[in-house]
Length: 121
Image (cartoon, rainbow, N blue to C red; front, side, top):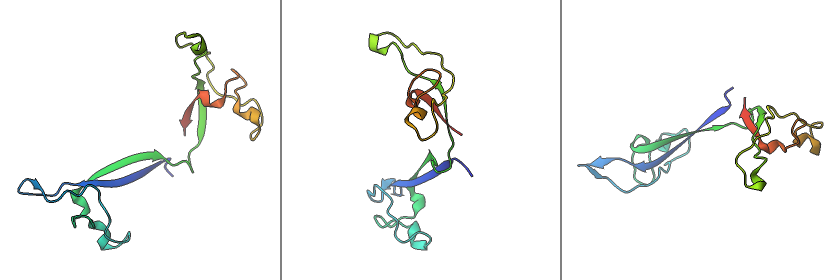
């Protein structure tokens, strides 16, 4: 199973008559329930879905993703107004058992888990 999920939306109608927009439909509105032929036609302008801009976004399916925390990205000199100074911690290691507050702190650098680079496997 893929960790990515495809989200497809349809936007503005691009159907033209003699080079001019047929109408000013801004967003595809399905004309019927999913799986029916009417679902392919817009309620706003009556055009087929193929005349609307297609926007595909990929997002991570959080129900199947495995999260691993990598190197620490905390800027340890930010409070002094200095430039970026990292501590060199290469990987998050929980300081306690899963489900305890200590599990959110890194045993190597002491930083909270949110300062560590998040990778989805």
